[in-house]
Length: 173
Image (cartoon, rainbow, N blue to C red; front, side, top):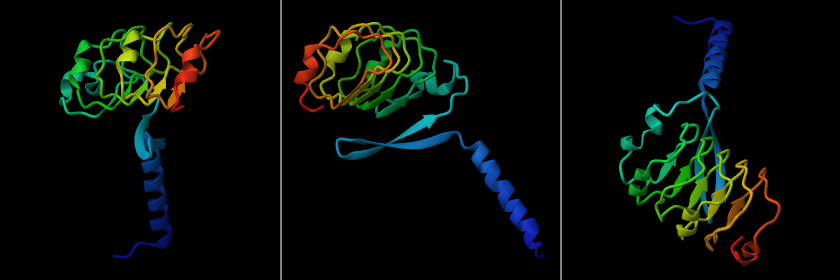
């Protein structure tokens, strides 16, 4: 049985509107060392640390990317170190002021909107780190050596009065 064209068009419009409303993720592209990396940027709905995606036990040790933003972490579990192949870690919008030892395989680390006042010393132990963001973290100082592998360092919206001379030595930036 054929549908009237106006009804069919209306049905298609409603389906498209539902699809757009239901879409929770936007895709953003970032260029990192000549490789395009796709990040899932989730909406700002309230999340709790009891969400499955916030439970580190639910991930296999071979995971390469973790999105742990909005997980309400006050401290990051030390078990993060077991992810020896982890390349990208997003810890944005938690309440972190310190970090445990992190996997040395990390290349991208987002710490947006946390409670860091100084850069944690664990950052110095990340020889492959290429992108580091401390945006909106209330940083007052950078007292630790930064990895010389850094290409992008994001320090906007902090309380820094000066930048360390070491920034001039980061040749890849």
